[in-house]
Length: 337
Ligand code: SF4
Image 1 (tube, protein in one colour):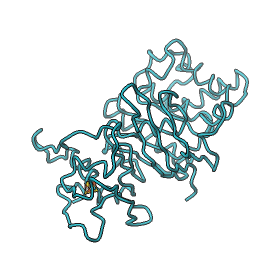
Image 2: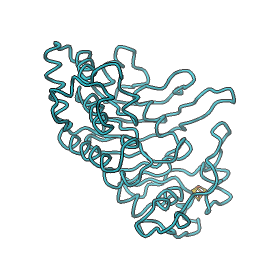
Image 3: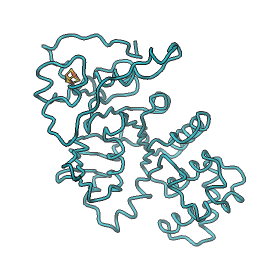
Image 4: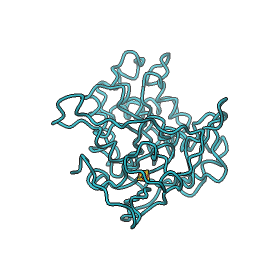
């Protein structure tokens, strides 16, 4: 499948009073046309930082995309784009929808004006044309009475409606990649499902690739094609949805899967919780980043970083347990069985 984005050796640091926080550590991956790639991991693993870097939305300083990092959109390095090119890239090539539409939308402008503004910047069309296009977009994201809704302010809409408006704005310039950063966290469960269904419908209709940044494995199970698991700024495992849910090979992926409540989970005590805390990203991490929390850690894990092992064309894992001399371990309580 055609690649629309290629990330190569991406390193991102934050310069703080305490020292240099190496938030993303030499990750490489690609996004293919029309697929949904989910990036999962706990808070602070680098997933949102990576997503923002793809759109060059990180504030520099304190953030710094290190030399040698490449974010290639159709072969063009986003890291080197000038301001003018960035303006068209954001929106026309890659767009983003954020977690909380209330803070992303301007409360002092009607939603119609906000959609029209984006259209007029990118498409150089008249006000009348932009208004007609805004109504069309609101209908596309299933907002009823679109002609009336465009005159309303964000606070007059429900949370689900606001997120639909955000999606309409993101889609207004037909981007080839849509980044959705925890798009349903602020919404209740039924609305969550409607928003995710809408994203899927639009992806199928327009062939837009989606990067879904989330900690919600339920959403991932329903909507992702491929999954990338991040831990402490590293990608530790990547695979198709089936490979990750039914044949994951990294102990951190097992921990993530095990911490999802199932219908059989009767009490809080039955719910698996991973002990310990992620490593301090200011300190050097010579070995496996998960070593301090991994129940299968061996001596080598603390000293030498595991190389990537390919288990199939799509399934890659970074763990010393893949070494032919490593002990065989059982995947305990893995959801895949
Ligand atoms: Fe655990 Fe070692 Fe694998 Fe890291 S490399 S996940 S510490 S077994």
